[in-house]
Length: 316
Image (cartoon, rainbow, N blue to C red; front, side):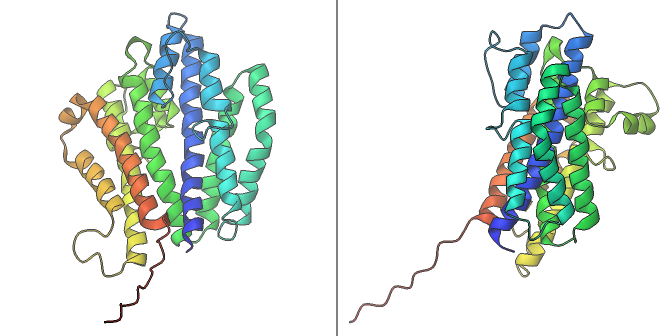
């Protein structure tokens, strides 16, 4: 597969997942501000912007600033609108390997964003967040239903998995690091779609340690950090097996696989009490892991190799 197409698929997976998860985080944030009038809005907004990589001073932070930066900024791939626009642009460059249904879904989503933005400004942003969640689920559902499990699908799911690790760790950080402005664990579980699976698993009220453990370590919930790392590792193993057939006899073939494997092993073999005691540091480490793994994937699969130049021997 051409590296250009592989890179487009990888970033489609990342951007669609980023839009979905950002919508979930903002939905919890705005709902919490409405339900609890005692929350310090500026502090909560400043904490959220810092966790999402766009820090501002507490005096400049408010809900309007949060929505402008994380929802409506078309020029920023970190916002909902920017991420979905970027996903659609990448899909234009990979139409030969995407099914028509996926392209149409991304195109319809992109074309509906101006109307959704207008409605969000007029009636509140929750309709936008619901729209983004539903359209993101449709894109990945169509990918599962209409794409062969070849390299195209592997790059798409690899991008989604790495982004999901990063964003789930950020969702946990909104609870762990926000202090008095932190959302409840019930809201965090709802934002990740994990509330009902958590109740079916533990059959009781929400407990902070169990909620963090579920979102980090559960092997069966697809949005958990461990399950996402495991999925990313499986994708990398298949891609390496297809491209470097003899390099996997000793260790692993690629740096990205090493980075993801170390993170997965850390979660799998560290005791749960130790993991929870060091949770802020571990969440930050997971975000760095995703950044490093993404850079390694880019270097391994997408970077064009400089053409080799043969230098003639000098005449003796």
